[in-house]
Amino acid sequence: MTYVIGRACIDVMDKSCVQECPVDCIYEGARSLYINPDECVDCGACKLICRMEAIYYETDLPADQQQHLADNAAFFSEVLPGRSAPLGAPGGAAVLGRVGVDTPLVAALPQPESCSHTHPDG
Image (cartoon, rainbow, N blue to C red; front, top):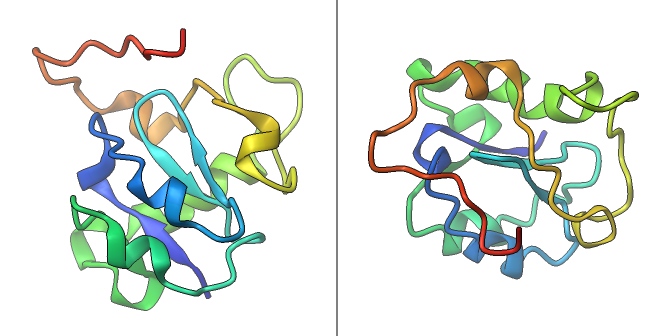
């Protein structure tokens, strides 16, 4: 079992959850954050601090967001655009840094007109 980041995080990425996570298992894509199911210890700290209410325990994921369970896992188990191998379990988001790409599900979603995905870190 694990926590899952849902639709409300896309194009927002508040990142308070990243700072709160005691095991550094929340990774940054281009438009969304992703929880590594192999590194998550199910403490729930991320869910409690998320101002967007975008984080769910996998069994509490709303029916209209069920695709995000597999999508969060796919971020780590499948080869992402521009990469030569899956991320797997790199041992912490800080070690890896910003990944800068998303899963096909997130990448295919329409972007808000007012959203520019220029990240302050480059």
